[in-house]
Amino acid sequence: MPANPVLWDLDERGVATVTLNRPEVNNAYDAGLINGVLAAMDELGKKPQLRVVVLRGNGKHFQAGADLKWINGVRPKSAEENEAVSQATFEAVQRLNLLPIPTVALVQGGCFGGGTGVISACDVVIAADNALFSITEVRWGLTAAIIIPQLCDAIGVRQVRRYALTGERFGAADARRIGLVHEVVPLADLEAAGARVVEQLLGNGPEAMAETKALALESSFGGMGVDDEAYARLVRMHSARRRTAEASEGLTSFAEKRAGNWAGLGK
Image (cartoon, rainbow, N blue to C red; front, side, top):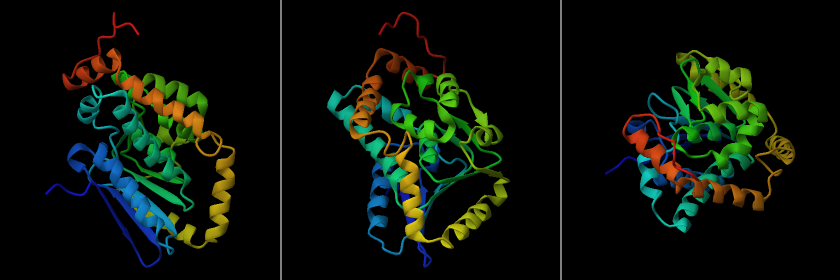
């Protein structure tokens, strides 16, 4: 039996730990992981004692973005099927973003593509000093459309215009400098650093924190400042880009471990 792609537990303090659990592929997301995140949010939403959510990745890496083998399998399907995949991906990130409970992400190793959107949707992000980041989608002829609002919230439009266009990798120190993470600690201290933040959050009024978070989101790109119609457009763009010749070449180049050949593809 395959392992559950998302694990969660809730302790007696009301602290939930949600663990991305596909370490064999560096926790790259596919339909199973997306649905696992949504299911975890559904179940935790039923728990009145819930106070804090801690998000982590099992294994050496936090989250390696999309499983490109899975994406390449989705790509030739119908526009409707592709849009459904993008919609589910959007919902997983946005549910985390709008959760009226403080969220803490603990990042080790790789955090690529959609992983950067996931941590941008969290309230507190602590990275190990071995963490490595990249908004990778353009490398494969794809776009990060559905996480651009969260990234703009986290690091600002100016930094998105660099890092989402270059797709370059950058380390934990640069991630802190641009605001993608709040704190960088030695890998061995990552869990302890997260525990300190959790204790700080548990000492605060739950309703006051929920109201504070809602007020912050009212003026944000990634919260209430982007309406449903705008997000529907992002979902359509995200899924449509996956079905282009450029995406086909990008995903083929990934599989063949070579640079993309973009010349002559047209639009």
